[in-house]
Length: 113
Length: 111
Image (cartoon, rainbow over all chains, first blue to last red; front, top):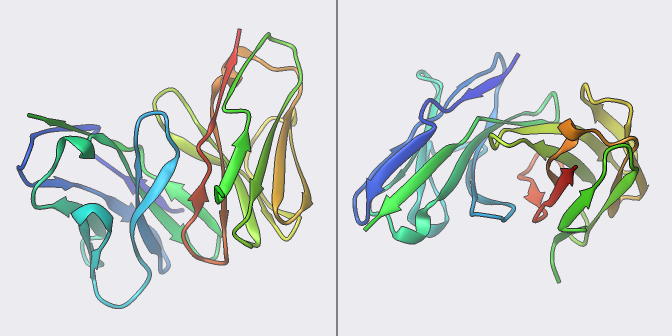
């Protein structure tokens, strides 16, 4: 079985502060990992992905994530957040054998002035 | 020239009715999906089609029936709607084992 855990349902942060959104996964085989963002009343947009190669992955809007196989983690980071980063963030896992994307429960990032 | 488009964006209907949601992608992808997002924002896959062939069918009531007339379209028909069907339904597409591209969602409200 495969699963994705996002322990923080909500992360409040002040504008220009750094942020880390945590994601841990469980899988018995190799995986691809993704972070998606959902702005209010919109669909999901890909922030970044890890398929192979360098474990530090850079994405759009200044976000980056690090794949850590030994800790089975794929945490998302941004050094300085903006008000416009307020959204729901989803970590997701793709087990190539099962051909389906499994999502975590999401983390709501709330950026205040 | 939206990549994955779904209609309608909002759907309000009475219990017991039958409704359809349409999805089209112009990305040339070979795989399409339907996901359901509940009120707690949890996303769960419902169906997946590859080149018009059903490859994933999660434990979804058989009142839900996907139809793929060609690989660019995947429609979702729902019979005898129930209150618990109220959710946001997302269509998505992908090419092989790559990222999914999502539509903007259809918010279904069953009264």
